[in-house]
Length: 270
Image 1 (cartoon, rainbow, N blue to C red):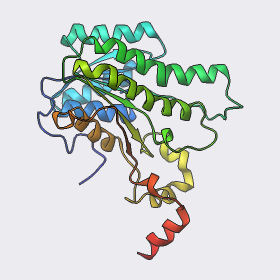
Image 2 (tube, rainbow, N blue to C red):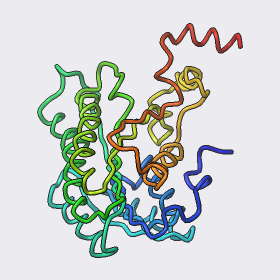
Image 3 (cartoon, helix red, strand yellow):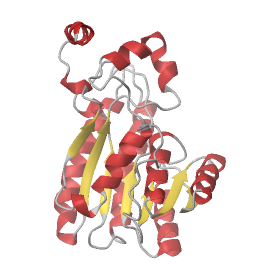
Image 4 (tube, rainbow, N blue to C red):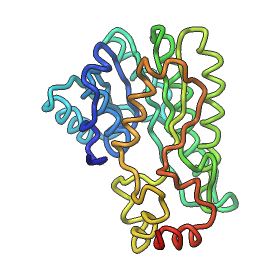
């Protein structure tokens, strides 16, 4: 069973008659999530800044027999976020699932980061999640779900990724606040916190450390967008209707390793 194809383990018709909006879905994790929801019967609104990439995702979904539309939106622009929600509602009459996934980062320390760095990350990775939820919630029926994509950096982090790591922790707090406020309306809100995921830039970032990084994961590999998509599809399903306000790590057990070298010695002797 390959973990790489986001549609391979799709549950047929689990999300039939569902409308899902996935931000940052022109590539990477967001694309995988969009394809998974479509494979499970949802009508998917693909969105991002690149029309060419977005239309390519829509074409792939439609070629596989799914339903999707692309809406170009820059998550740093509040008016475009509001227009995205309005477009989705005009097209499909409601929103059942919102997946806040768009994200950026800067490789800066707290002392190096500038106001521009701060605004770039906070407006994309944090403010947009609030605004998307704020506008979408008004059009979500009982049983609707909001999923916020954060990171394992919300729990454990490293130097040189500020304010990304601070924002990711903030997303977990936002999820708790939204879960309390929107629960009486019949909505659930949860955070997905991925660890190392194989996306376009991963191999370049890891370089010679790629195999080592695989080894320090108890499952022996990095994650894929398909892994995250499977969790998203579950959390938006009826089976997860009693789960809300949670921040769920999906990192192949990486966060459970206290000392890498001790673990590697054990692994190699096993």
